[in-house]
Structure formats: C-alpha cells, structure tokens
Image 1 (cartoon, rainbow, N blue to C red):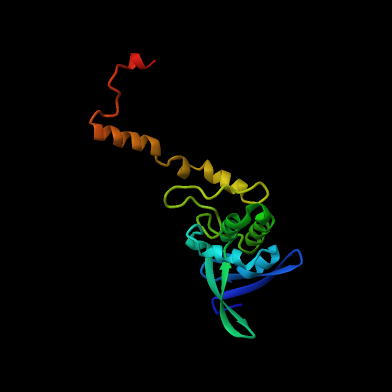
Image 2: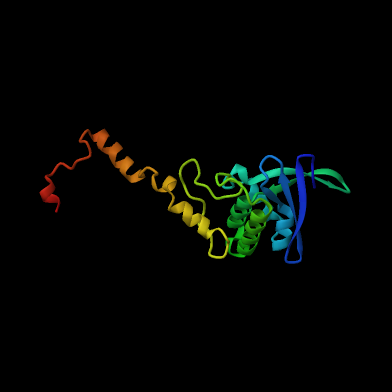
Length: 184
C-alpha cells in the first residue's frame, strides 16, 4: 500500500492489523479506512460517512494499494479523520480506536506541527469547535485546550452582532426607548 512518496507500516489494534501510511509532505500517519472498519466490526456502509460534508477535507486522502487485483485506490484517514468518522457513526463504540490511533500517530510523528489539522483538532473557518469528544476517546484534553484557547474565546459574539444590526435597522443605536430607571 505504498507509492514513492508514501511509507507503509502495519500496526495491530488488539489482534487486528491496521495499515498506516505516512506521506512525505508532512509525516502525519494516515490509517486505512477498511482496516479500521473491519477492526471495529462495523458494516461497510459506515465507510460511506467519509464522503459527507461533516468530515473536513484534511481528514482523508487517497493512497495506492497494491494487491492481487493490481493497483487500486484506498481511502486513508488522518488521526483527526478517525475521530470525526467514529463520531459520525458511533462515538461510544469508536472511543477505544480513536484513542489508540492518537497514541500511534503521536509515536510515529512526534514532531508534528501543532497547527496541522490532520494531527490536531482545530477551530474551523467559522470559528466553531469540533464535536465534543467522549471521555475515553483520547481527544477530550485537546478539545478542552481548544475550547479555552484565545482563538476560540475571542470569537465574535453572535448575539451582540445580531442585536447591533437590528438596532442599526431601527435607527435607535441599540438603546431602548424608555429610560434606564424604568427597566430596573
């Protein structure tokens, strides 16, 4: 399952083999979607969820797989991709494998940049947090750090913006018509 710009490693999740691919462009390991699905015992329909808009683009890639049938394309997921995919299908049953994938990824790529969205949870372009990880998923601490980060806390207050726009349309500058003492 390799190309000239890929390095393959076979890992074991319990007694189930899972292929890991490391691309030269960042060193972040990606994990075979079909191997993950088989290790979890989930139906093949669960793999269709990687094509939903809820899964960020940086979460999956295509790798070449060499087998008896020749060369085929194989979908591989980044560590955050495994988190999003299991969260979409069954977060509770996927906790153990997401924690395992995160540990394996940190061992295979210990010097990953903290701003790499394939390796670390990030706030999206609309300044929204990723889904809340479950307790034993291995991502809870990272999600909490993100939740209390300056980048997230400095997001614009949507309610204040809506009220300001409504006030501007009314032409009142956002102040009520009655005196402040009457509101107490």
